[in-house]
Amino acid sequence: MSQILTYVITNMCCGEFPSSALVDPPIIDYVIAPLGVTHYGKNAQRDGLLITFDGALEMKRFTKFIAAGVLCLTASVAVEAQTTATQGITFAVSAINVISATGSSVLTVNTATPGSNPTQASGVGATTYAVTTNAGSGSGVSQDITIEINSNMPAGLTLGATLTAPTASGTSAGAVTLSTTPVTAVSGITKTAEGGLAVAYTLDATVAAGVVSSASRTVTLTIVTTP
Amino acid sequence: MRFVSGCLCVALAISPGRLPAQSSSIALTVLPGSLTVMDAVPGAQPSALTDQTARYSVTVASGRMKIAGQLDTPLPSGVTIKIQLAAPSGATSMGSVVLTDTPQDLVRFIPPGQRTGLPVTLILTATVTAGIVSYAASHVVLTLVDDP
Image (cartoon, rainbow over all chains, first blue to last red; front, side, top):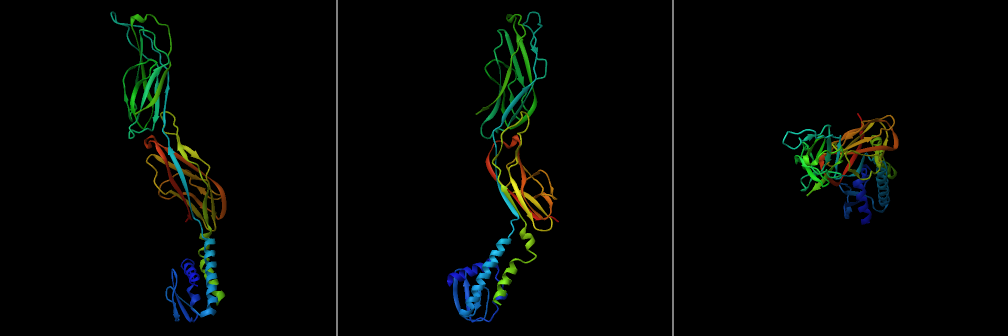
């Protein structure tokens, strides 16, 4: 009994028992608390959680109330609409460090000031690079750009390059001498996405180099993480 | 009288005024995998990632309704999620909408009917200023409401 009434009070709370169904002249009152029956006796009132019904005969009615309550609850659940849908999304941004170079340059040493080594030649032709990195400086790392060529220059010839640093971050090392060993040309790049950054080449020759036939080198730019 | 009691109870739950709204529903039926931005064209911002695996279903019992969308938590700075819901027949998609923690209309003028398997397009973008973002979760909340 106590368990049944506990069940009833649960459904009454959620299923909205119609109070008009409890107005018949009662004989026994039940005070129903969340944990079950706590009091009963002769009374003809229903007040709050106080429900009245008429002894054994009315227990059938009460059972009907229970059935009605279950039906009420079931019907309510059946028509309950799901008007909100929620979906979890997992996302991430990986480390991105990409660089590219475009253009080519021609350098010819063909003059000198009398008494001096041949005059330095500047590259003719647009050469630029572009870089994107989302690495931050907060973690204590940054990105450097190194530059190298695929084979060393002949004796007496020096190929140099100057990379313009991105405006957002980074510091240019100025003119650096190119060889097959990578050398840092720009350092300290963080969270940058810029293109069209200039690369300027120079060629120096000593008289000891003599006359050098046309040759070419491939320049490689690499973005590297430095602690 | 006993029988009337049961009828009263049922009538309370299924009153004519509540049935239409309670019969309309929306559900996201297919979950997308993890979305990761991981590439870029040099010199440009990271490439957006597009996912079109998710699907949704919507049922409108009566009247005209709309779907609003929002995130339950703000995204990290520099990270953006756009969503585009394909419109059911007779409705209008608002196109690709940047999700925020404020509800925004995604589909409007949805007429009564039941549609399933409608495509959901999610686009994850990140700027370089977002930096590297570890895997995090947010929830897309779609709400079906009356469209005045």
